[in-house]
Image (cartoon, rainbow, N blue to C red; front, side, top):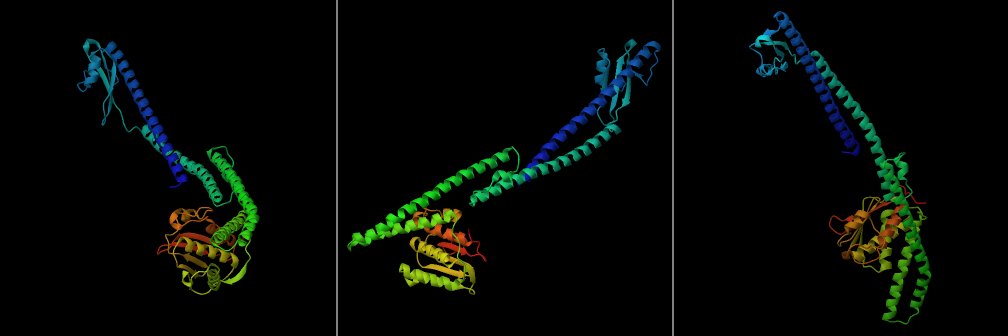
Amino acid sequence: MGLRSKLGLIFVLVSSLAILVLCVAVYTQAQSARLDRTRSFADERIQAAAESYDRSEVPVFGARLDDPDLPPPLRDAVMNGKRATFKTAAPNAKMWAAVGVKNGRILSIVQDYDVNDPSMNALRRALILGGIGTVALVALGSVIAAGSLSRRIVAVAGTARRIAAGDLDASAAGAAGKGKDEVQALATALDTMASSLRGQLEAERRFTADVAHDLRTPVTGLLTAAELLPPGRPSELVRDRAKVLRRLVEDLLEIARFDSGVEQADLEHVGLGAFVGSAVGRLRMQQSLAPDSVVVHRLGREETISTDSRRIERILANLIVNGLRHGRPPVEVTVQGRTIEVVDHGNGYPEELIAEGPRRFRSGVAERGVGHGLGLTIAAGHAKVLGAELTFGIAPGGGACARLVLPDSPETES
């Protein structure tokens, strides 16, 4: 049940209870007033009858002396010297009035007390119809009011999702509309949080770009100097670490370009299945991989698409290298239509990565090995430039499964 339904139901229940209590109170008060009027009328009649009897000893108004049907509580009250009235219970309710007269006798009168009084029946019908109509109006008003509140909250929630997806310029206060209530306060707080987050991300992007640019020149010099070292195991270790450092700097620069939003796809028509086979072959040569370490499967007919082949090759290389480094061979690459799947036979991606996507400098759990966590981040960045969908999960037979779904027409970033 949504917020709109819950608020509407609460309003209707509260209003119905209030109207019910009010109707019962009005009806009870009307019954009490009717009973008081009947008592007063009976008391006036018995007074007049007693005065007439005292003068002429002739009962009037249908009064009777020492009526044997006189209710005992009323008889006791009169014996104590009181003038009293008494109403018997339904059915056949009656209103009695009695008073003591001369010679120790009791003069009494009795009249019917109709429970089904027409005026009370009319009042009861009016209260029921009025209550139902009021509840209906309250229900309509509550649905309208709750709908307005619900729409504003849904709009703020939609803006929050846009901010979570990376649109930090989205305004929750604008989505919430005008007002100075709690919803507007929530939207303002959300905008403040987004502004703070935007500032932090911009500072992080600048720091990453500055560090990468500042390290590029000394790392290049370090790599050049390492090549001049005499042959030997220590020299090989230095050259190897220098190359790793250079790759890290290049990865940081690539991520900085993604963060700046200047990357664009260079589109060309590509036969996807044939291209993936060629790209995997080039990767085997560059990485000196065994032929059976990476296996390509092509299912269905060949699909020719308009895309950026360089970025697809980069995505494939990062996914395959990640599978070989953190999983177990063979890494199976399956091409079907516009979809490319890369599956290894290791322990699979960690749940956090599957749920939230890759993050830089977070390589996952220990079973997936060590690393800077930049390979999958860069692959996701290239996929975003292509307008493709890159998801991570667990393969049906176990192991990590990365699925790249290319769009019909790439939505390139400007």
